Image (cartoon, rainbow, N blue to C red; front, side, top):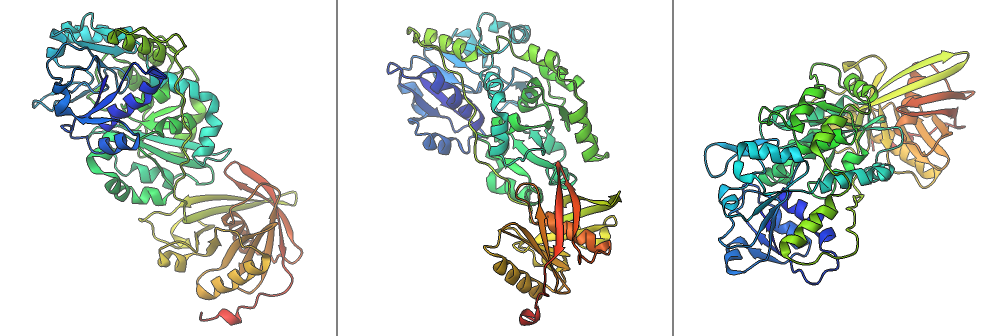
Length: 545
């Protein structure tokens, strides 16, 4: 068997499904033929070598005699011969017109060349009978050349739903946080093509204790621009905590973990809708084929309004979607659910003219990659304090600071302060911050006090500092006092106790007799004990240092 390796997208799809089809069968030898003619070939060779695949140049394909050619890319130049060619879809159906690399026109994505059909060699795997009708209506030569196998990727995702909590943990999403996944296909009509600033704007407008944001970008974008360029273009988004999902082996995990998909007309968005995820369309290209399941999604899904509050739209979408909103879309896209691997294996062995193994075909698992976003090192904390029947509640919302803001307490609403970690690389931010935080715990309380003294001495513009120690946090004030903060819940980010103490200082609290307040931050709500540590903190030794 020869597997065509032309783009990262198509190569990954073949690599994902073939091990399940050919498991434990020494009769089949697989070679990957590398085709470098695509504009999106960058990364294919590295992927094949990383996976330990046997590789040959595409030009040598004519010198061998394969029994079957398998490709998840329809845009291949197959040498003359009589071996069958099985074309797997690398997305959901045939729903998009794309530029034709052979002529100045567009073509239907997924449609093979007429020559292969005329020679009786091509077989097109489809996930729904409607797709055969669609193809025959525009390309009559397709008649009798399709194989209904279902969609292995959709079955893989459905099978992974039971492990959704594990996927959320693998992405660093805490219990109670909402994960918003941005999904962008490639080209000028894609989500990022239409709104390049969206990946930075979404996390900047959502409180970081209550929301996480991830982005799934089509592999063609990574191939065309390179990972370095993408990271440079999304620098502000990454500073705001965006989790940029790598193009290989992780997007399924992110989609399973998602609470909301903000997408476009790419297949990932349709997969999310079919799984029952709430969907907002931030873009939807006019290159979508009418009468397809994707076109149905375009009519049903609400649009993202760039002029409206991002938080209000996200919350409304998550809380307001009926569970069966996209059931009809899924039914039009995916027939024979749960049977794709078995049907595809039967087709492969039939084309190879080999008896199929007697053991049942395995299901495709979804791995749980260990992916964490770069931590947010600077934020604006918006706080409110209210007292009812003697019980004070401090509510904290923290928003990441990206490259475009002015720093300082006066640029936003009242009761807002700038805070950052002392590891923040921009010293101008540290000099402007009211609250400075040490992310790593101090080994002892004495070490924590020393850090507070040194930090307040080094950065005279700060009002207070916060560091985690065993049993809670220490918050050092500019006047030399130290406040001990203990919580009733799990381990806490010291930025939250720092925000609580800052809020109480504004309210005129002297901490002399201590206080018990309720902290609310995202889904977190717990009692926080605040009391003044005996004895002043001596700053004299570090002044000027």
